[in-house]
Length: 155
Image (tube, rainbow, N blue to C red; front, top):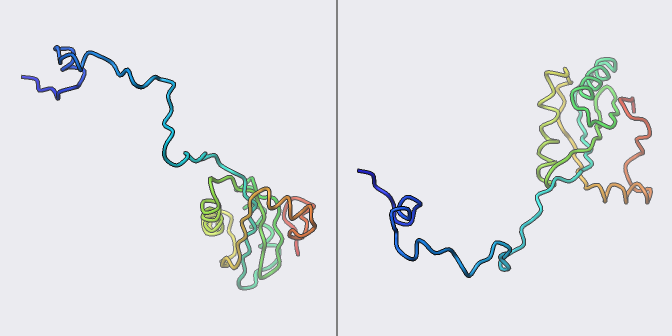
């Protein structure tokens, strides 16, 4: 014996009554719900990220090689500046909101530490701003020091 829940397609096929046979007449396919909060557009945005790291001194050639490998592994890297005991990395991140962009940025150094052989430095600074804010700062001359050349460069 097959059991069927009332109102399902199988019960309607077996003659589920007049209500089951008629369609909804009060709602047309083009009607939209007008109440409630607007549905946010969950489209990703571009965020400019500046990540600062520092720690024990490491020979400059090792730092440079590690940052070049990071740039190869993370192709959106714009520029890296470095010294024997600190570095600054700038890049664009595509994310839904600031929280997502910051979370990715905070994982970047640790996740690539072994594959790029990065120094065992800690993150000491993070700035994440949206694209519009970054461009306004640069246009006003208030942004970070200009990263005129892409790539890995000493301070």
